[in-house]
Image (tube, rainbow, N blue to C red):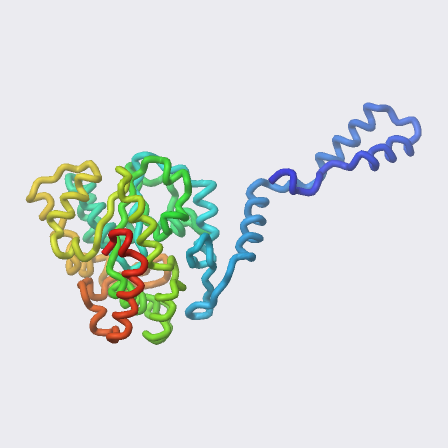
Length: 352
């Protein structure tokens, strides 16, 4: 990077001209003049160089118009908001993950809020004051979003201020995670949801927070093409699934968690190094139920600070919380198309 910057010293030809054209100038005086000239040039910091290179790289990425006059950029095979591409580069250079860190990963609208609540509750079950936090704050206020709240353009959370174990959530696909994260030994928990319910939840959510009225048909076409934030959805899920044998990666399926929360919360606790008995597991499940999270102080409409960093109200993260709601929206043809893509993408991988 240093070699690409303009030279801050005068070139050899100019130095020679200066020395020969000045009468009775000593070598020491010439050296002093050269030093003064070199040191008087404006310096370009490494950060400024990195920012310029990042902007240049981003400008070259494939772009596609998305909702509400926004654009998505295709970065390493996935579609991301421009600000997330910048954050990825910041994470790569600035984030030093610890083996004790916990990364909660997911595709948007796949159970992120629930996973945050469960993880926090498990880790703080014996801390009565921390347990009260879930009744006063939304899980998104408790656990920061790695890409934006800690390494975005205007980060609101300082990594060094977080207690150990530090917990972050991310919507980044596994192939885009930094090598430092992948080799740090930190625990990664990934939750996935069936594509039909994920899509319908996305459609409702983005229309609500963006104030748009994008049709179901348009949104469905974009989802199937993979042109949604974090997409393609099927590749996003597949990326984490292919790493499932690693001992520091734990996968959850939203539908299975809904069906048997006691068993899966117990397994999640074991993965987190917390041995909970049956009563403790039931306590976690109860405190993190959809109804209790939705009605907690941090999620009520009348709360003064009831605004997520995206500008969305916290109640936007709680709609139905059920399995199979997509059947109320998708046509038979839509379901068949999703099934076809699912079989093509996941069948040979054992995901179905």
